[in-house]
Length: 143
Image (tube, rainbow, N blue to C red):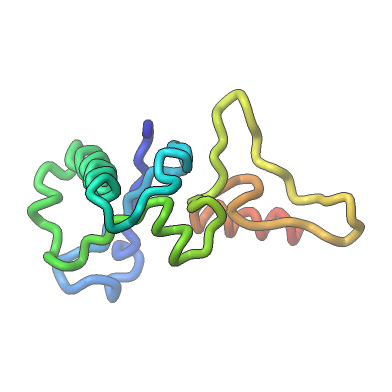
């Protein structure tokens, strides 16, 4: 884990949160290998500890900018996902939150394929994960 990305969608759509509150979405963008989670039983103490450690990593990063963020979270609204969560509920292969690309070693695939008229778009193609990047991928493919 080496980066945390955050967004606050309630700044754009205030109906997403009660008045005076905001929604904060924070995640680690595919910077840890699936093998760290593979084979863990979601009910085991080992899994729960890893999930708590992952949550602490996110909160610690957020608290560099919002020092009291944890204490301001509305009880019952915090949801922590892991690769196993993504695999189970989002049906993502190997629990991905987008492709794991190591700088200097890999690049994201483009949009063309060897099949005439077949193009690829989405979070596994350039420019990558997240709603803005996926929307840009669709625009690039369309144009």
